[in-house]
Image (cartoon, rainbow, N blue to C red; front, side, top):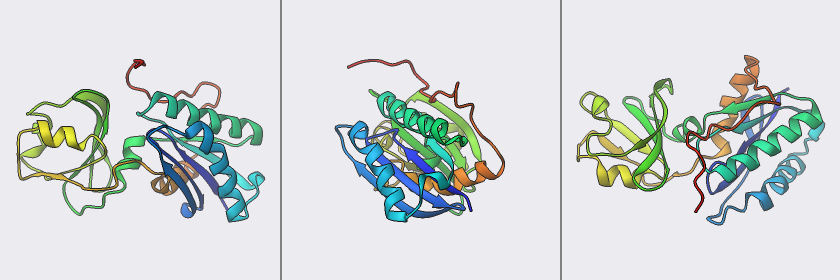
Length: 221
């Protein structure tokens, strides 16, 4: 049996899930605009283990959402994940935040475009097909009227995330642009199967050298 603790802290949503063989058995999360991760993260981890009656010694791995996202949130999540891996001598798994976000959408045909707010008219974005294969890598980009033109002519584009408002406001109107009305933050709920896949293929990070995928340099204020 493979118990994996999943940590998602890249946005205002502080989210912890516990999975067994890729299936969700416990989820605890709180979306707080004040970024209460430093206060909540460790208590959420303890609660997930206690409520699931799983000893910390039974954990097979720790998975963390690697970014992009909030610098502070990512640092807190990665630090917690690394600390647990060191203490328990278990592997560290990282999962793309935008893939985690995109997994909230289920479409039969078309492209999934998770977008996260990155200040001003910029977003972090990626493009996946309906089977969540990467079509375009994760990048920071300034949204313009012709953004995603390469894909719009032949595909419906399904957007998700808190960068949607910018996209809907700035991209030239097109019936192939589909914007979702909810599920705007990544959650550890969608990490369970992704982390289990990586665990089975021994796709692990070097605990000593792993760093979040910030994509941009930190800007205060």
